[in-house]
Length: 255
Length: 342
Image (cartoon, rainbow over all chains, first blue to last red):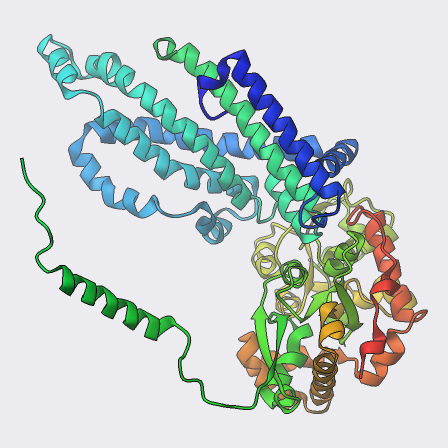
């Protein structure tokens, strides 16, 4: 969903009707033979592929394999980026020390790490986690640094004037101030981690949604490719919804 | 409040912009004065550094296509699927492809191409290479085998396992790996065996303790039909013989002239091919030594239906269907067009 504006039943109905119409139009275009199925498979064909893969017991394996890789890689990146980012966001000295390295790492696409990760970690699962980690870490770190820096310095000084120590300022001012932006940044990064898993599953993977898409491509099974894409979108939507629930628990004032 | 001042010399600005555009047009735009030269028919060919494309490359270097009034645009693709996708999109006139990609498209009911030849056989330089403790296919049970999924080696490994009653899903661990990444994985002990083809086949064999467990000659369809697990096919876009029959004929004539040259002079061919493959002359000559070329006369015998090759390709399609690689085996004969051969 694009914005929470659509929450009212009226807008939900409009969204649902437009979605159904779009799918019906897509099906009709394919059934009328206006586009060859190899270029655009019909929704029913994609559904049949999903059923076939489920019957062979493969569908859930692919979904779970990708979810595991995304979650391990992303959580490792978040666990490293959040404390380190807060530290750098509060220390100009260390930020200037690490800034050149972060600037060099930030623009690197996750795919560019494949050759080195293969040499360092071989073809293991750790290699795949590392691709997701490397693709998510530097951008997450930047989000956290910016979130920390955005905390109003007047509030920090006020707390210090009232006798708060470094730990108190961190716990009572910086963390609550930066957390909403950190969480928003991590939500964006979770989506990006899903793009990284596609790169991770290009090499030495025998399961996962990225593998499913690439293997489908090799056999011109565009319905498999489309199914993989749909499943990634659905999985990200579900994880996003879970994230929102966690956000409401951790940051009740934000909702 | 600051006021925006107008540009002091708008005329000069326009002149500068026009000059810049002229310079850019001169650098990147089409040439305005094209010298008159005999018009050549352009044929777009989809290739790569793989040996199946050697005839076109050698033909270009020897000028065989030029003599027939053809200008070959050689486009490189990293995989057969990408090449066939481009053919399907109408960007290529001719291409060579591994048969698995062609069969996959046939299985999808795509009729936009024909198979006109199978130009080579490389049965002794594709196979399964294993560590010394694996002496038999049955020894692969519980082992890790590297294969490139959707490749001829994948088919070979599946066939080998099946012939010994091993289940690829349960009894072994198949790891999807590019052939270029296999030597490192094999050396580090991350995999116990590899399904691999030349030139990496020879490179893996050079690793200490590596040996050939089987090659394509042990493939079930090779024994019955003399067809490897993924024979190379020369394919043509359906539009070519329909709209440009003379060009199609000229291309195929030059193509088989080139195949004859590859057979008669492998030394000079190797020297011509190093530009394409980037191999050194010695390795290039070694690759050529292991390839058997099918000349025009042989093509005409092989592609007839019913015949050994056509039957073998049909069996291969059924094999792919059985292993869930394609949804249904197509009637391969519908795509075979030996009548297009000169």
